[in-house]
Image 1: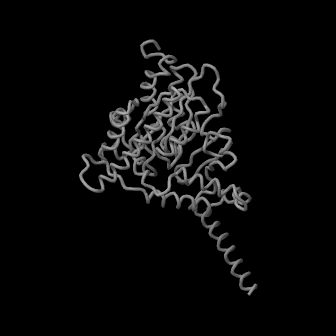
Image 2 (image 1 turned 180 degrees about the vertical axis):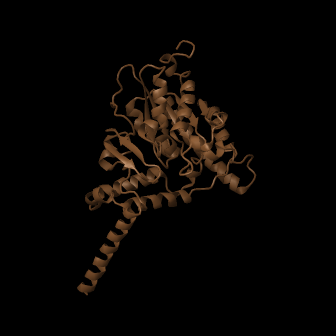
Image 3 (image 1 turned 135 degrees about the horizontal axis):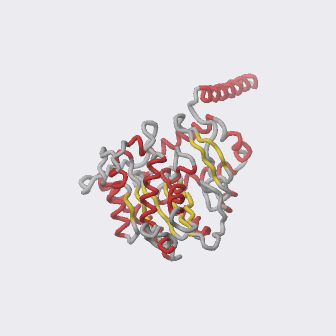
Amino acid sequence: TWKVLGIIGLSFIMAIVLAELLLRLFGLAPTEGLATVNVSDFRRLPGIFAPNQELVVRQIRALPYRVAIDSLGYRGAPFPRDKPPGETRILFVGDSFIHGDFVDNDETLPAQLERVLGERCHNVRVINAGLGGSTIVDHRELVARAMVLSPDLVIVGFSENDVSDLGRPTSMWEQLRENRELKSRFPMSLLYGALRNTALWNLALAVRGRLNAARGAEVTPAAPITSDSDHAVARLRDRYEAELIAIRDLLRAQNIPLAFAAFPAHLTVSGTWRPDQIRWAVSMASEAGIPAFDLLPTLQELRLPAESLFLLPHDGHPSPRGYGVGASYLAERLAQLPPLLGVCRTPATS
């Protein structure tokens, strides 16, 4: 019996090793990935990523990109927890469009926004609080945790899948809680460091992410509401609005203004999708008294091919150029709002 069990165990180990070798040989899965915080780091840091990481993410072979996470758990250049005198801090929360999947650190929307604002505004820092796969319920948590950083302005980024992502059976925030508790418990606390750098582990994470995304409700931006499926969309939109208003009220209690920025999908920019979802989001935020910015007209007015503004054909996320267009547009609008109104030069005097 023990001999049979030994043979079975050895065969299993050999199969795992062979699978790992094949995945690495054919480049079917990356061997390292961006890690989120464990339980200990979650308690002491405002950011959601494990601190002090620097790696090249190869989730898509054609789109490798460099990521650096600072000591506070945010993507970007290091900055102090305590805000220095005279600094204006902008917290930018959102999903992978804000985090900047598939572009380097200095090419993300928050990084380019800070750079453009720096050309006309005194001492402005933009904190990248983007989290891939997140939506408004997760953004509320990210904002609440970042209050220790004393932001002067918070921007919520909107992507067109943020409404449908509310239909998932388990929120991203709950998945992250389960993840950090699992990797902080014995024996995973001992094994995690080695497992996270295997192709099998990263493949399993990718498959899990796709399955969770597939379970979300399908949202077709259509108006007016005309069917039972549309009513399901309306309920998700109502929930999104309630969560955004909760963020607004949290910030109002601390006299921190909130802004809203809607970045359209490439199919909307190209005219393949109707712009109803973007229009609804901007209108909803405006009616809630939140300054709302629609990047769709600016992206379309350039009349550039979608392949220039997005990472097509490999992926639908914005390209560095697309983020640059968005950053320039937002910088112009934000410079006219408190608290930037007092620290930014107007074009006429620059």
